Image (cartoon, rainbow, N blue to C red):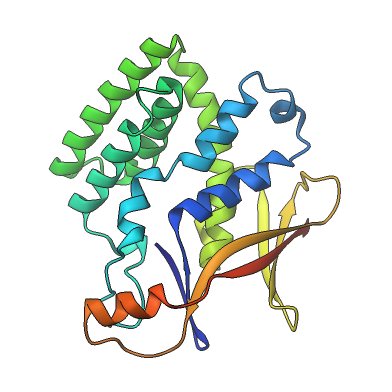
Length: 240
């Protein structure tokens, strides 16, 4: 779960909805290198499924330590996060080894900062071997998967910035972004440079906003979140 805390409440976005939003963004990008990419449709699907390992965790989210929101994905313990990524790699391995290999590549990139920790080192060794096995089964070179991961990193970073309200989570050379709350419309404006769309475009992001308050048990929190109506947050993508 991706959680943004505000005085008005905590906005909850599932990893699946975050991933779909990233794919929606990239689908409309008018970048020659992507528009004419020979694996464009596969890449869009991989972006939309790259966090599939979080499905189960988001279906029954943990309560944060203060009891006021779900546990944000960044606060998950390492053991749980590693299992989520193992599940994410394997879910589509039989159907599409290439897609599964891209998920593994994504996991290896994100876990790079933990490479010196023994448990993460073991995970990375296994994920790297599995990625290579999947690529061999798909008949794809490692260099091609590494190049394709650029598009996943781009879409993932843009979507995460919108979901969290934190531009610092996006750091890709050659790109700049800014975020602005659009009141009273209740939308978020994502400014991007260089601008990749034909013109300013409005998207929608599914979310739930939990009213301020503290929940004394996992059951009370789960009931509150389950009974909170889904909302569609407007996101306007415009030139920076």
